[in-house]
Amino acid sequence: MSVLEVKTSIELDNLVLTGLEAELVAGNAVPKSYVDSTLQGAVSVLNGSDVTLNARVDTVASELSNEEQTRSSADGILTNSINEEKTRAEGVEFNQGLSITNLESNKYDKEGGSISGEVKLDSYLQFGEFWRVKGSGSGDRLTFQHYSDNQWKNSVPFISRV
Image 1 (cartoon, rainbow, N blue to C red):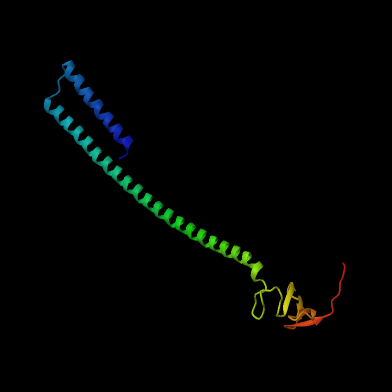
Image 2 (image 1 turned 30 degrees about the horizontal axis):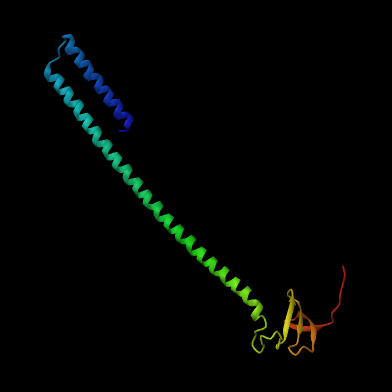
């Protein structure tokens, strides 16, 4: 029974009671037992309506509570995921920043090399997948190389203009 139906039922009961009262006042007395039974019926209907409404209110409150708990749980999971991603991203950012900061001091610090700035190993400057310039560690040779057949081959440098 909806709230509107209960209100309508109450209003109808009130009309019946008002009509009975008017008949009593006008002298058209209805037997007392009839009035008593009508009033008892109206009271029973109202009491039943109250119980039904209270049960509905409790059900809706329970559903809202469950939904609120579900949302709260989802919010917690989402917040944790965001915090984990933020921590991971900040760690990566810090490590990259540290690598860039240390690049100046350790760019020549390779196995067999020294921090003096002199390269003691063969070094390469690569252009794309297939071209590189190779410098010897002793500094006596600079070679242009091309990659083909799964190996690097020396090539004659040339300059072209399109």
